[in-house]
Length: 211
Image (cartoon, rainbow, N blue to C red):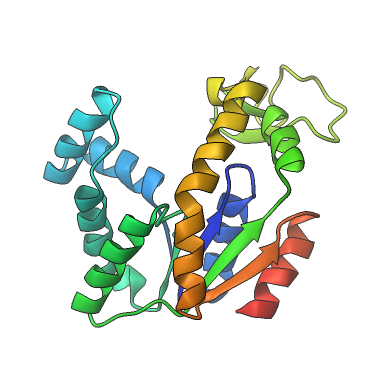
């Protein structure tokens, strides 16, 4: 099974991606995690990617595609894979399809998690990160201290990109970049829109119903 999971920031991609990958025993591929891992291991690809990251510029699509290709050529992805938040643009999707074709592979399904903008802003504005264990935690429906991590007792902080004005700008950029991508996958008969509002279990049920 080869899947792509799309969704705006705060739509719950990461949470659902882990659950889906675990259920079907397929590789969970997050380009953010992949980049950090390559940099940490100081691979040639990681060294090249880090040069862009340190300059505050985007890592070129070709470099990311090359990293993904290495993963897909490993035995760990023989049972399938789930792309978490990649591709993000039409250009990336076209390059990704070309790379898959070269490996004799193709995408089975693209799932687009949809959540209203107002709810996304509230979700992200309530998000906190622990300085100690790096867990991401939401203050929504939580009665404990907004400054202390409920997992390890570390200090919670709010990321700069989770400020409300920044969130709204991120969502605008996402909408502009991703609309052509969604149309592309719809045209190819691969995309299913899934309501991302509600509990994790409820959203998971909806996703499973379209897989």
